[in-house]
Length: 93
Image (cartoon, rainbow, N blue to C red; front, top):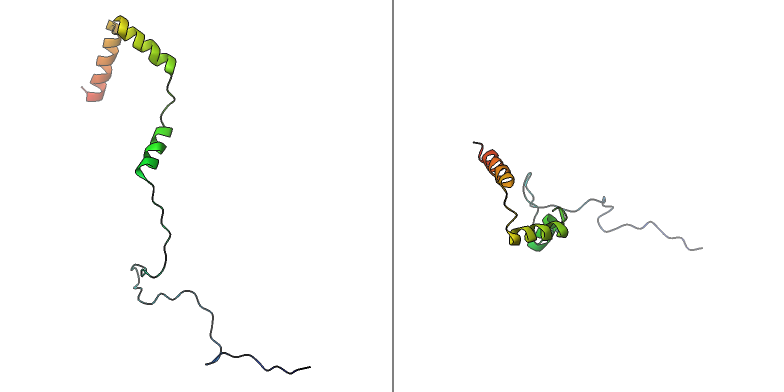
């Protein structure tokens, strides 16, 4: 059997340490040499997210209202009263 001596690095054993952050001041930014993960959300993705939160469109209700508008029967005194009340609430009058 061959007798193998201990393995040593030049200058002796060195402790294992984490990444070196030379040049980082306390409370300062990390130097550009260290990669940092970043997420960018496009304007279209933001818009799609907002659209997904909108209530579902009721096509039959839209068709009904369009037909009433075309027939001239959509605007009634009752609907006008409700609209005015809501406007005054919004204006806080």
